[in-house]
Structure formats: structure tokens, C-alpha cells
Image 1 (cartoon, rainbow, N blue to C red):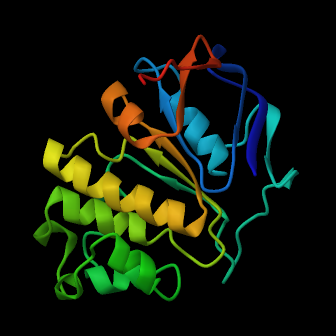
Image 2 (cartoon, rainbow, N blue to C red):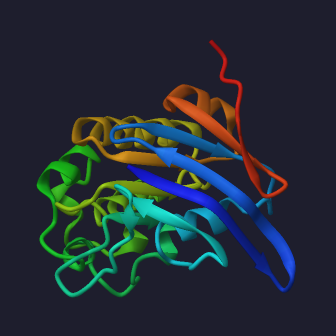
Length: 210
């Protein structure tokens, strides 16, 4: 469904990605690991349409990613690591959820976003609660794939588990492709169907424990 074909990218002449290729199927949850600075976030931003690769291409169902437009959010969404940087701190939660269109009630319920949070500001929520709100914004009717870039890095172990259980559950029910970028091999092994490691600009399969 979502594929990256021989992606190459460099910053300031220093290569970050070199012919990196992957494919995600509908309903598949794939992990992505690698050393800090290996290019995981760069690849995630390219997959989500936030960055144009210098070589290679991204395809959805064999066609180029369609550009987003008014009333037509992108079918592939990129969720950044810091939820607090992805929302306007002056807005109340209800407005944040409605910013991209009518909030998806199934996703809101599945992610555990409480109705009582609607009138609160982001600073009034815990890190785990705000992460759920930030993710819920991406669930629109045309969503096909979601790239999550270290979304649990700032959460404690209990919040990590709660968020990922909810996220992977709703992704499987809706047949979404989910790329879970995480430094934690344990999280990748627990929640992903398979996993990849980004090393020297290329993607290689990760041996998953049985």
C-alpha cells in the first residue's frame, strides 16, 4: 500500500539516506529502529510528505502521494515526537481536535480522549493525555497510513503501554498501515509485526525475538 523506493537524501552534502526502501501493507504495524542521527525522522518526514526526497519516490497504492488541500487532508500522516510542539498552546482541546475537520468519534474513543478534556488547554493535560489528543487529530476518513516518530519517548512505561495498546488496536481495526519509530527494541518486538533497522542510510530487517 505505502512504499518508499530507493530514497536518498543529504543535508549539507552529508548523506543521511541512501537507497532506503520499504513497503507497508494495510493493517500492518512495522517498527523502525536505528542509532540517533541515522535518519529515522528524515525518512518519516519523507513518508508523510513533509520533505521531498532528493532521489527515489514514495508511492501509495502505486501512485504518487496526493497533495493535501482544503477539506482534503493527506492520506499519510506524520506524528512528531513532541506532542506539545504539534498543538497551539493557546487553543482548548476541543478546538485542537476540530482543527483538521470533524473529530473522528471512533478514534477519540479508542485513544481514550475524555470528553472532560474539551475545555482544557494542553498545559492542563499529562504527557500521555496530550499524546492521545495529538494522535486523534490525524484520524480522518481518508487516513491510510500513519508514521509515528518516537511518540512515546517522553512518556513513562505505563503511559507508553497504554498509548501503544490503544493506537495499535485502532490501527488494526481500521486497516491502517502504521510505522512505529522507536529506539526501544522491546517496544518494537511487543507491538510490531516486523521491524527494520536504519543503518548507513539503508534499511535492513531486524531479527525479532520469538
